[in-house]
Image 1 (cartoon, helix red, strand yellow):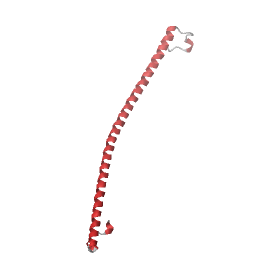
Image 2: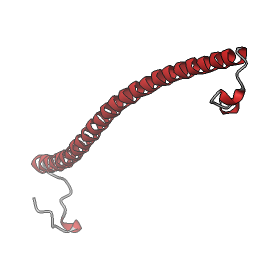
Image 3: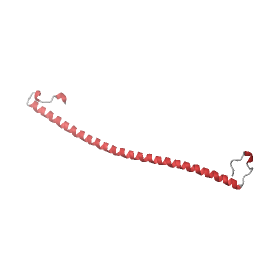
Image 4: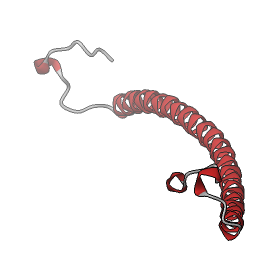
Length: 118
């Protein structure tokens, strides 16, 4: 079929073969456009899958880091409690020592630690 014919030269009525040929041409063009669009969607899907994999890997790394940080915080809290317990015990010993020294009437200049440092 010759596409470069003028408007005046168009036939008034197309034959069945010409109509089928034109319809096939339109379907081929539509198929080609849909194939290009499908390829674009597939590329976009591949990018999205890559982004998702990256996000999952990052989330996994952050979960591991969070677990390590929580473990470290727990250990530091335990150490803090142990240190507080030791400080309390040492203060208790100091108070008992000072009480014994006062009981035996030893002057405060021999106590060693000024009271306002506690």
